[in-house]
Length: 118
Length: 267
Image 1 (cartoon, rainbow over the protein chains, first blue to last red):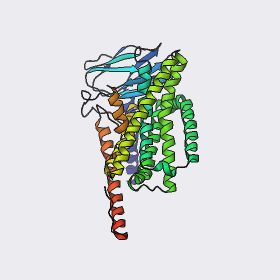
Image 2: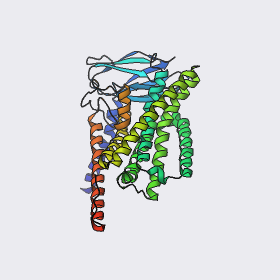
Image 3: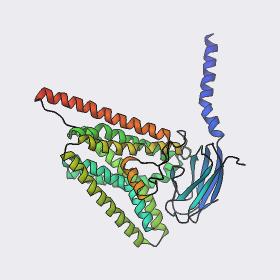
Image 4: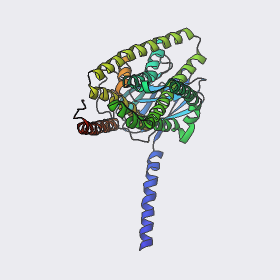
């Protein structure tokens, strides 16, 4: 009886521990690149009401800062490195972002769509 | 570029100026010797350079969430050090030596945390452009604005203290530190440690985050045009801690005063 209860408890713990990882694994990934102080693609489509993982590659030789007041995100992109930011769940709409060190050239939008095709 | 340098100067360095205003207004500077000030400046400079050099490596830690985790720890350390050491200074103006060490540690961490990000920007501009003149002009304007604002703010704090409006001064302090600690929510949401929820309201039609006033209000009390419920919860929780601390401290102080000479500790 005691052994069975221990087994049951260990299964519950296992589920509780693995659940966040399972949810995390399902997060869709989207990629952005900054090169010559320009983000590509300049318009990125992501699904609405869903958390997404944004992976940004900085191919420039200097640092840049990804900044978005709409998304409430701000992160330094170091040269030659990739950076991960989680955004959402977001409502349908257009969300602007820019490179804080070169705001005139490094600009883009994230288009959040309800009927998003992967 | 000029405007950008000014905006980043205000965003990254104005909070340091505001912190020094609070320290000056509550006479903490009087009990800190010149030797200690030199020590703070030296350790802070070392901290800024070390953080600046280590930031790319920190970025790689724990699958790319290193900077956010480390910055969160630093912000929380500054918060707790200042809440439980400097807040009593703001109330009774007599910090003990042990509390002073916590205050000094908090100052160093706070300077390194904010200034290192600005150095990343400067490094990026200087290595990338020939427009040094614009950068120097931007730095001069940014410094001028920060010094002008600090002068006015410190005048206001001195005036409030002179009039014995300690609760108002303390509220400024509480809102400033709460604004600083509320940044941890955005940091944690950014790397998915805390879930993001939708904004509770949108006041960007009144004051936009990206405007000069937005930056100023953000430095003063952590203003955000579209705050999430997590941020508001932390904000209110932090303010509650501050006011409970103030009223408990004030009650103890009043009873001490009554026991000794029947005096009253005014708010």
